[in-house]
Image (cartoon, rainbow, N blue to C red; front, side, top):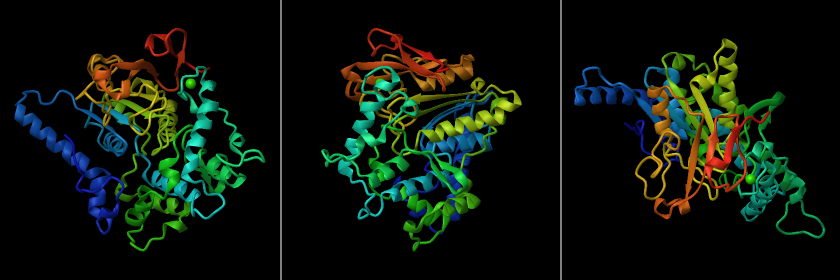
Amino acid sequence: MSTDTGHISAAVDGSWALNAPETLIDWGHRAMHGSIMLSKHIITNYYAAPDGIKYSYYASCSTGGRQGLKEIQLHPESFDGISIGAPAWWSPHLAGATLWQGLYNYPDSDPKYIGPSLFSTITEEMKRQCDPQDGLVDDIISDPYACNFDFEALLCTDTNSSACLTPEQLTTLYKFYNDWVDTNQEFVFPGISLGTDPGFLLASIQTLGSDFFQYFVYNDTNYDYTKFTYKDVQFADTINPGNASADDFDLSPFLERGGKILKYHGTADPLIPTGSSIYFYKKVLQTLGPKGINIEDFYRFFLIPDMNHCSGSKTGPWYIAGGSQSVAGATHSVPGYEDAEHDIILAMVNWVEGNEAPEHLIATKFVNDTVALGVQSQRPLCVYPKQAKYISGNPNLPENWECRSLY
Ligand SMILES: [Ca+2]
């Protein structure tokens, strides 16, 4: 089953929500649940199964990730297992950060403005510094959070006046790659990971942010997003348009019904900061840990080094046949490797039906992301917070890596 949740629009156009409060609730959670219930009814009757449906699964990414988390928070019975990628789970804060990050670089007449011609300079310097810090020079920043990055290496000097940044521009860059912290040191939203292309969020004001406040929060065609501040996020929190935020960290009802969650997020996501998934994981841990629950018993999270939003990486293995992932020449699963170690859907099925929790997954990079051209490299993805560390031999082979705890 899939659903348009009751409206049709381009992904980055929020104008459909103008004067449409009921449609907003449909988008937030109601259409998903209604569609699930209806499809279960149809499937049960079509197949005339005497015992009904044995297992139900969900797989999606981005807003689909949010919708899956929201569904199991409101209706834990709906699914036995969900596979969630890069979820847009914290609606007012994600939209607020999207707008705020664009405003760092606004207007373009300001001395702090960084033009697009410098973006590759920035990411190349991050790659140069951070790639080796993970222990292997492989054109992949495997652990952006452990990179000690010297921003001032990008500073213009008297001998270097192009492909460099002024002190004012460095301030913009520093904000962009760090958490947004506002009044009274309150954490608002994580910044983008080091090494991630700033092109999407920094180059211009994205309607994913401004339309949320214009149409979802204020319902006002005259809204001026250039006046946006943290106060607007605080106000949006009080409304929580469409009750969309999937921010109920007590997932114990889903655990108690036997549900399983496999979640992944690329470490070079230019759209939804990777840190927002880490933050969610830690919030669930902090909520359930004190109750004596080991969250790995039902919720396992994988970072995918260098992967962009939901899919894709120039150099890193990223393909696990997750929701919205695709490579040329595959209609489903991972051709040549259709098993629970390489395919996150099969891993989820294996966990739910075979009671075997995945200790790792193996991500695949096909040459030019085309199956017919063969496998370029494979590498294990580890259950967070473990990381894949290179041992020896050919780094393109997964057996030459192991998942290790960092401490
Ligand atoms: Ca590296």
